[in-house]
View 1 (cartoon, rainbow, N blue to C red):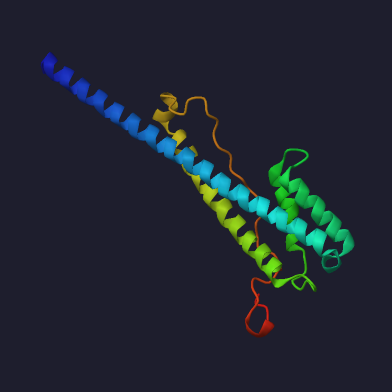
View 2 (view 1 turned 120 degrees about the vertical axis):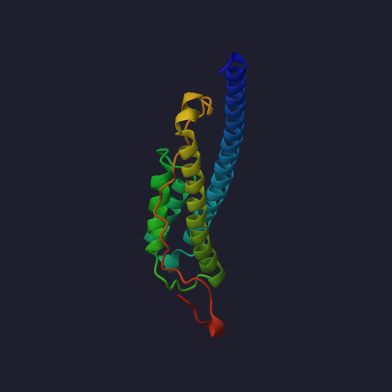
Length: 182
């Protein structure tokens, strides 16, 4: 082979590497935007759940029990702004307390119970979407060439957000004739 063929081969290889690098940078940027949007959605649902829990504790302490209402309000406040900085732990404690509430809360409006149940479902979905975005981002950034070329710059890897988001005991919605469905 002549030197012209080798040069052409080298230029084509360089162009392919540049095209792949551009595609990968675009993909990384989109994934990081996806992680940010998913975190915003998850944080919104977690804040909503904490707000509803606090409303339940403060407005209906007789329905949940005075002592449990005090704990629920404290756990909701901690979930909004964790004292020790461990948001996952604070959210797990709040979630566990909400799951342990009885299904029948006398005096609590059906709308609040429905909001709590719906928010719990949205927390689970939002967490899954967020963790999927984190997984995809981490997988792309951990590839051999992206690491070698340091395509991520100095950004740290996004972290998974693992909480126990099993559904609780609260009835989902009011059924026909005033019945509640489970």
